[in-house]
Amino acid sequence: MRTFVALLYSITLGEGRRVVMSDLKAMAEGLGLKNVRTLVATGNLVFESEKISIAGLEKRLESAFEQTFGRHVDIIVRAAGDWRKLASGNPFPTESVEAGDQVAVRVMRKPVAEDAISGLQAYAAADEKVLLVGGDIWVVFSRERPSSRLLAAANHKRMGIGTSRNWNTVRKLAEMIGA
Image (cartoon, rainbow, N blue to C red):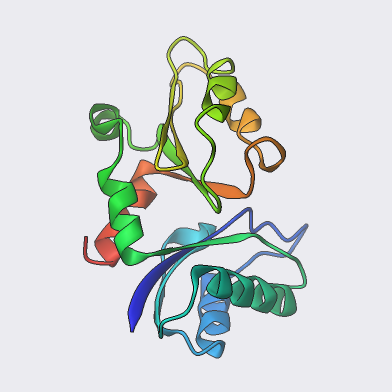
């Protein structure tokens, strides 16, 4: 058995409906996934599975989500070793200690090309930072602005399928898999 992390993108189902983490856990267990655990109510799963491709797990989870909750949601899966590498590769360690909720990574299904990051830098405010590490986009958001143009600029259409998690969540998921 191998351990995996799965991240759901934007699990809002519409007015009056939400995804309860116990239902998400039951859905994953229904696929035969083992030792399924969730972290906070934003769609983070840790589980174990027999050897299977990442793409295969993503397809199975996305299909089950659509059948269970009536809506398609992109799901990004990483093997535990890859998650540990992502967490240990945080290019903003000082900022993460000071304000873990202001540091985020957009975890990508397919690595972002090096040249795409320069386009994002144009959207960064003077007190924001953006870097590409291993194909994922790391950002330090401004404390001074309630919303950042970077978040909108790093969308699916421009960067490809991905989902963002703040440093606090990245770190807690790493702890869950024993990093």
